Image (cartoon, rainbow, N blue to C red):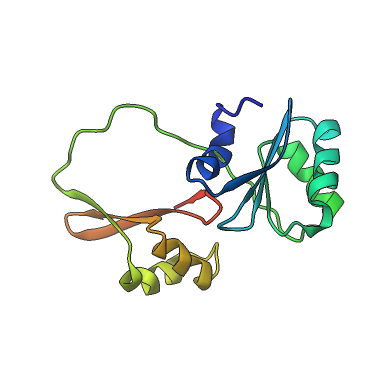
Length: 161
């Protein structure tokens, strides 16, 4: 399956970092399990193709499923009785690196930043946040020495700000 589109960035990231195991690959479907987060990532745009793949390889045993297609995700949500659903959008900048700005600075978060991050960001547990920081997957942005924001990569490869 061709996963070159922007909607497949999460799958590509997990495969590129070497933590993705291909569970099933069909002409129109790709199912991956991420060994870091335990999440399943599924690329398929057709429910009649996708749901049988999910039934066969993960079914009710799945705790976290990320899909590239909203309709497939909604069907899986109902079918497997997930209790929570989050709709995410993929964004990427493929242009040239912007010109340097003397006032802007970015650094990788470390353990000393955990309190600030956990007070601000509530989308993952403090334990998962600690693992994300330990993997050096959170960047902190500063403007003239003042913190202005952060962005990070969840364990399964999705991004957050």
